[in-house]
Image 1 (cartoon, one colour):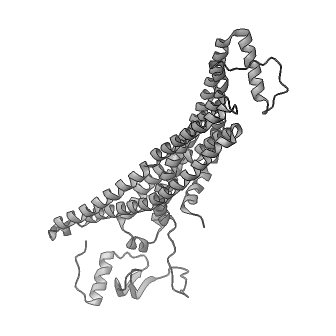
Image 2 (cartoon, one colour; image 1 turned 135 degrees about the vertical axis):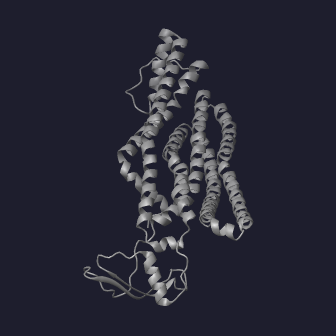
Image 3 (cartoon, rainbow, N blue to C red; image 1 turned 90 degrees about the vertical axis):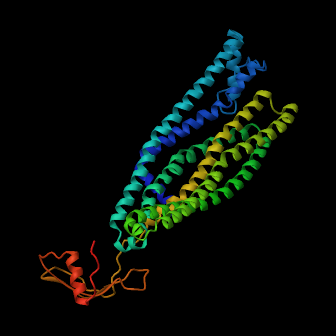
Length: 418
C-alpha cells in the first residue's frame, strides 16, 4: 500500500514533460558546477606562478590526460601572449562555466513552477470533489472546523513544506554527488573525513526530523481544533449569549490558543536548527581538511592549487547540504499535514446496506417508510425511530411537514423548527 508521500508524488505523472525538462536542466547545471571546480586550478597555477610549461603535444584526448591537454594549450598561450593574457583566458573560461550553470539553474526552476502549483491545484480539487462524494455520516463524525483546516491550512502546508522544496530534494543530492566524486578522484584519503562527517550528520538530522514530524502533526491537529471552536462559536452565538457563557468560551479558546502557540514555537525552533547545525558541521570538516591537507601538500602528494580546488569542492557541498537538510526537515513537517489530507482522500465512500437487501428496479407508485429508525455510527442511542411516512409519486413533501407528521404520530411535543 502506498504511503501518503508516494501518493503525493503520483500527482507528478500529469506533468511528465515538464519534469523531464527540469531533470535535464538540473543535470546540465550539475555538470557545469562540477567542471567549474577544477577550472580554478589553471587560474591558481598562473596566479601563483606554478604553471608547468608543456612543450610536447599530448596523445589523443581522453579523460585521463585531460589535465595534460589543458596544460599544453595554456603553456602555448603563455609562451605566445604572456601570463596576463593566459590569466584572462582562464578567467573567461570560469565566467562561461558559471554563466551556463546559472542559466540551467533558472530553466530548472522555470519548468518546475507549473508542476508545483499544478499539483497543489489537483490536491485542492480532489479534496473538494471527495467532500462532495462522501456520505453524510462522515460529516457527523468530523468537526467542520477541522475539515476546513485540512482543506485550506494543511494544503498550504504541503505546498510550502514539500512542493516548494521538491527541487532541492532532486537537485542538491546531484550537486553533492558531483562534488564528492571530484574529491574522491583527487584525494580518496582526504575524502574519508567527509564520509565520517556525513554519516554523523545523517544520524543527527534523522533524529531531529522524526521529532519534527511528530510535533508538526500535533500543531496541525491543534489548529484544526481552534478552527472548529471558532466555527462552533459563531454558529452557536445565540446560545452562548443566551446562557451568558462568553467568559467561559473566551477562557476555553484562550487556553487552546496558547497551547497552539507553544507547540508552534517549539516546532519552529527545531526547524530553524537545521541550517546552523549543518553549517557548523561543515566548518568543522573544513578545519579537519585544512589540517590534513597541509600534510598532503607538505609531502608533495598534492599541489597548492589542487588543494584549493578540493576545498572549493567541499564548500560547493556545504550549501547544497544545508538546503537538503532544510528540505528534509520541511518534508517531515509537511508530511503531518499530508497524512491529515490523505485521511480524507482515503475515506470510504460506500454506504453499507444490510445483507440480502432487495434491489429497487423502478419507481411505480409511492415511497413508503415503515417503522424506520436511524442512529449515528458512534452513538448508542437512536436519533429517530419508528417513522412511518408515505410519499406518492410526483408529490413533494417538505422536511418540515414530514417532521410534523412524525411528531403527530408519536405524540411528541413539537420542537422549534429553524
